Length: 530
Image 1 (tube, rainbow, N blue to C red):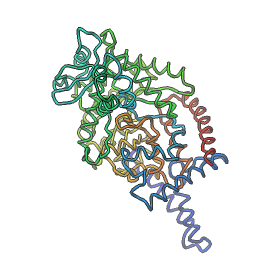
Image 2 (cartoon, rainbow, N blue to C red; image 1 turned 30 degrees about the horizontal axis):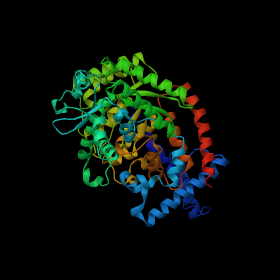
Image 3 (tube, rainbow, N blue to C red; image 1 turned 90 degrees about the horizontal axis):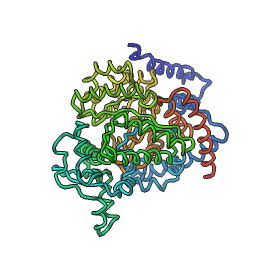
Image 4 (spheres, rainbow, N blue to C red; image 1 turned 90 degrees about the vertical axis):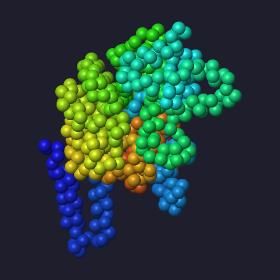
């Protein structure tokens, strides 16, 4: 197939050869330094942001930003153990918040966030301080010792919502996920606590991976993934109940808007939920709720461009359930064509069902739907999880989630460049979930050097003590981009998130206008740091 030609790689190679020939070391009229400079210039023009134009004002701001960046890098060379961009996020977060570079990046217009899972998109502290203070919020324990939130809406039927969920979502039919004890009122228990702040902190640990010793508490990928996926079960009861579901998703938009994100593409399961009267709201009702939240938020928040939904199904479901969800996706997308924008399979790839298992079904729905597949979220080479990238490309995915192992496949990354398929890079997620320890070693630096299209996402910020996407931008800026790249690469990364979004051409045109104005304001802010 055309996409697998190696022409692009060969073209890059020939370009380099021609450059060497044109500035040959054997030509007397060129000095060694001139040849060296020409090669550096060629590399710069080839990488992400290398061809972004900066006006005089932006150039001045760029110098300020680069000065800060290079001062940090120089300190890191001599004090490597305290170099923040190389440290685990759990150990570096409080220090990053004091970094003047982070202060600038918080103000940067981020464009859109295109890789975000709804259940883990809101800061854990807000969830505990707000949603668990409701009188109807309960907590129980499964027979396996897992704490789960649930809601009492009716004094006569304490378990109604949790048991109803068993009927509408197979993922929760496993008996070991049932309450093994009587659910207790969180508010009532809190009033009896000797230290309310400590009580809330302990509650927050149920939906937050943070620890001061991640290398001990999460010694390998399976250990952290087990805890990580259990947290989705713990928080599920909050998201099964319409009043808390609405409050949660409004806050999701608030936290990202406050972080200078103007647009979101959210992965969500769209499972039925229950309202305060015990009525089941089906997937169509849930979509209507989300659409109403977005429209209401847009009216109250200037320059927020909206949110769209990628329906995400867990790859641990049995085959028939996944195919049923695929059919439901086609139905929902047909009914909400500019709001339900695509389909994805999520969950730990190494232990999950690969895309190849569903190829025939995916072919059927590809006629009426778009794909935004997770693929290559693995350290292994040519395993099923790794080869998911190949099947994602063959199925014409619009973007690739994570794509961590893509760099091992030159034919595939060449095809991605040719087809302009963006890779959704999630720096902190890849570190916390054990793909890479030092983010300077993340393959995204290779993607930047090759100008493979990338966008920066935050994946599940609420589950690792983050908020918004600025922390991910910090690591991306300091670890993935060259020491001499500043405003150009930031501008390109943010713009990529709009360019490779599922917005319509008209929406992208409007986004470009809004982004330009916000970027101009950002430049003015940097200049105040002179």
